[in-house]
Length: 414
Image (cartoon, rainbow, N blue to C red; front, side):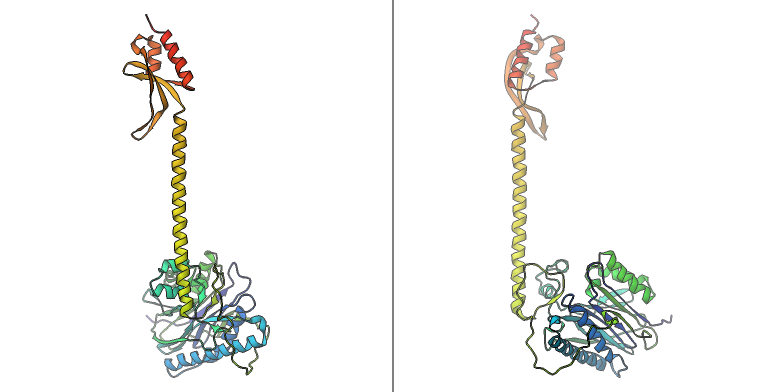
């Protein structure tokens, strides 16, 4: 069965963010997603500048290896542009962006990647993540410190170890070449999708919806259905029998689709030390992604923080359980004390008796006991009183019970 390759891209600001810090591009040969960081003042600028510069790599290459290297070099050049832009515009200090991109060369894909945006491959109905997240929680998972389930809700899941921007003069960028074949579906996305929609649901949409444009819309909608607290951006590339998966004309979405508020100026100035190298650990995780240097000190600090959090959680659970047990015991004691203030009149071994407690039991435990056995025999009572005593007579207190016994004694048949 012949297949026709095509591509699509979509981006949404989400339901919480004030602006879209994501950018993406689907072109003739190049497909790329960038997720900006640095808050309202810089994230959108960082991703837009990067995408607008990297589109220079959207042309024919002889080999996928050459394409991957060109994409790598273009990203490093974009990193220098971002640093120089911050020098001219101090209000953008701290901005950065993740990037996941690939160039198709025949039956191969040349990939370059940095950060926590992702590239997935759906082949023969099975989806696989092709990129490696550059985050601290991913490192914790790989070292066995936490599970994937714990990583999904970890308070520092948005801490990035590698990004482009005003954070690292020479960032390490992953490059790789992958084989591709007709029928493959390549998905590039920001973490606005991968962090809030399960891989199972993403794969189900890709398997079910064959039209690439409709599929991108469904993926964005799936994130919106989860509340979409972050920007959501996806690029979908279908591989056909021909050598192209091009989007014609090339499509740019997100912040890169709008004009920049200023034109970045390339200046020759000494390389500055990254201004975020000394970020202190914070007690709570911010909502926005941010960069921390890839250092063993910070990694060990995260581990120590995790241990403290586990201890706090364990102490909290122990305290909660202790207080709950104490409350139950207190309730039982108070309840039992209340029952022992109650009295009723009944029979014991053929005689009228005063009981202390209530006429109930908890399993095998009776909540009443004989307080006093009188000399009044049940057989000596009139028939109507005998029946009442055998069914027990409630008393308001001990004195009331004693009055009932006196009444029964007076009513005995001679």
